[in-house]
Length: 201
Image (cartoon, rainbow, N blue to C red; front, top):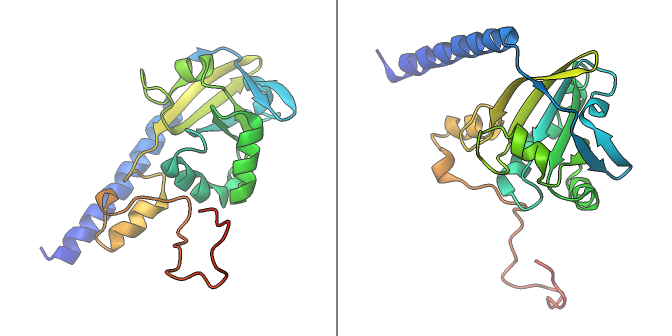
């Protein structure tokens, strides 16, 4: 078998595994969860409020403005916001206070609805990885009447299937050990024509 044939075979296997994963997640029924409280710029909201009249809610767990990797994932998801919102309610939650969330999100052009869990009870009880504090990922909740169920969740990490960057780097034979995301890719010129006074880097 040639290398190209082996690549194509592995791609087919990955496709089949993805279909199996979707089917398993469709059939899984999670446990009921409390109606947690979050803080937004508009005041306090509950988990049920975040459903905004829908029966499914996708909450993206972001570690906050201090994480370059979480910023990479959110940058990638940002373009999908209208597509995702055609089928589920969507919000991004982090420990950062609402004012900081909005400032950082606006600076990056993010269109997510934002809510802060403040690093409290919600994060401890609904972490995407049991026992892990402030782990990035996503949780899909379903609502039936007044009850909310945690249906599925995933963890985000370098090389995962949720960030297109890794697959595209893979086409170049590069992996997570070869590249680290940055908040900005601007590099200071060797000589600043304006003299460089009061430069914020």
